Each structure stands twice: as structure tokens, then as C-alpha cells.
Length: 64
Image (cartoon, rainbow, N blue to C red; front, side):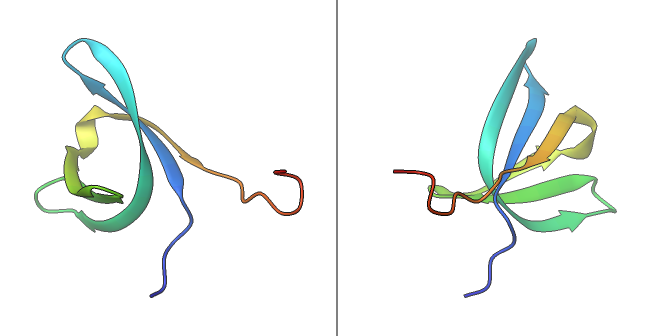
């Protein structure tokens, strides 16, 4: 199964900035929601709450 690059997403929730890692499943422009696939399943985040999105680098032969 094809997967997009892993990303780290920082978002605002309850007065704190939290982070999640996963793959972007889809973006709903009408409802303004990002669907993020994590190991535990799919979570939904409002686009207005997203602070930062980073692409995580792949580790090749240096992660030992």
C-alpha cells in the first residue's frame, strides 16, 4: 500500500500545543478538516487549530 511521507503535526488543543505523527489520509476543504492516519487509527483535526506541519526525514544507514 502506498503511503505519503511521515509528517509531524503540531496543533492547538485546550490551551496547549500538542503533536502527532502519521500520514495525511485526506483533507476536506469544505468542512476544513484534516484526516490524519496514525498507528492507532484515523484522527480528525480542524485546519484552524494546526500550528505547524513538518516532513520527517527518512533514516538510511545512520540509525544504528
